[in-house]
Image (cartoon, rainbow, N blue to C red):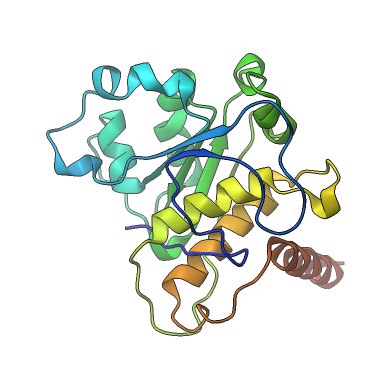
Length: 231
């Protein structure tokens, strides 16, 4: 399954459906349109998917589509031996390409202890259909990224991981620092989602909630420290 939990104090809510506002005192998202997130949890329980007939008509309406690797293979009709521990970024890009080409704006795949992958469509028009989506995702156009999961501090219980990951990603997309219009980079948004997931699955973190601001600040500090070491 997926590997992820809750990060911004309370960003691990219901991940399907639309999302608005923010969770951390940073002011609401841009005016004019909600974000529509869809989690295909349970897709593999049915017959092998006919992606065009089952999901295809809805894809142009989906801003953020989340699946784990098995579910992503199922809904795209891929019959292969992709494994969470060894799948490459290029393989993930090929896997999500049909979903993006058929209208999804952003596709996120959680990979258990490996982390998560997010890809964004190159279609400018798709990313500007709402003011909210345009404000955050237009700068991400054509980007994709694979990040590792956060290290666990306690016992792992993966229940609700995917929901928490998706909620964290949506919250990160809607969040604005200090009420201004500065949005997060794709890397930082994915970091927030992974932190949200980690807090959900890691029993040692559940009583230590972090705001999105804290997660972002930690990520920035770590990046600066790594840059110093590399120099």
